[in-house]
Length: 447
Image: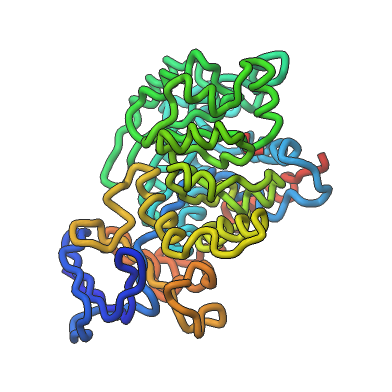
């Protein structure tokens, strides 16, 4: 048993003073308010929040950070740089990279991550002897880094969609694809959950999965995610081929609903917003990626008003800072509306914690209540960024650099801003070094 005491802890919708949290076997068994610290309490700095959920990750994209801006370009030319990384990874190098990336997430307060996983097979498209070797690398990486994992195994069957219809797979895309939707489902059935890993499914996008195959993906148990309307070109192609928007196509196939999360949801019609909200489909916004790739700004406030819970992800990891992501949701709304305070700080904390965990299949996480997993993040209130702030508005001021302590299932993963694995920067450097200067966007998305 462990007891933690903090001068402030986020309970329900805001900070509460003098809180003792008691943990036994990884679960919170006591939440006591207005108590003085005892001699056996472990004191936590600043404001303690529930663990953060990173609802959308492509771990291998981290190798692209700071390498894709030489000649400008677009989402589509960025995608070519991403493909060059995808060509080079194998289970061993993927383990090293993902372990470092997940450790970087832990340093930023992430206690659970939804990995949108489509790097399935060997570089020639042939399955490994263990068909889920790459998934197992992700499982091991998350366990060693100390974060919970939802493996969103992604169905990816076509090379794209344009006005002429579905395109064949490019050579590098063969790594992403199974022979057909039945083969995909059979492979996914071989991935077993464990105490640290849950399994769900993803439809890469309407560009990569034809309408006839959408229901079969939606039938797989667990959370279901899909890239949706990230680029206008996707909408234009879908309208040209199917006569409807991607959102309507998904709705007609029975994909939308409370177990589904639409990632990005940037270029939507009013009807799209109503369809997503009516089904209580969650929306995962990734503001740093959406800015980095010049994608655009999605209608977060309208989606929330329509009934869609919001969550956030770091996606391609141009930045790994979930506080920055959730703050970006509000800041994007300010820019598009000309008004401040579009999404209240308490609602932003909910997106970062409770609703993010629900979207990736950990609904018991994301709150500091008796019976919840003991997943805690202590954020300092005495740094140059946070000194003097109203703790209730912490998401509008703090960054990942202000995270002091992270506890997952009662185990300390980060203490004093240092991960239990040691120097995460060095881990990242070693994992990314093999690519040298080969990976660049030379002028010319998330594939």
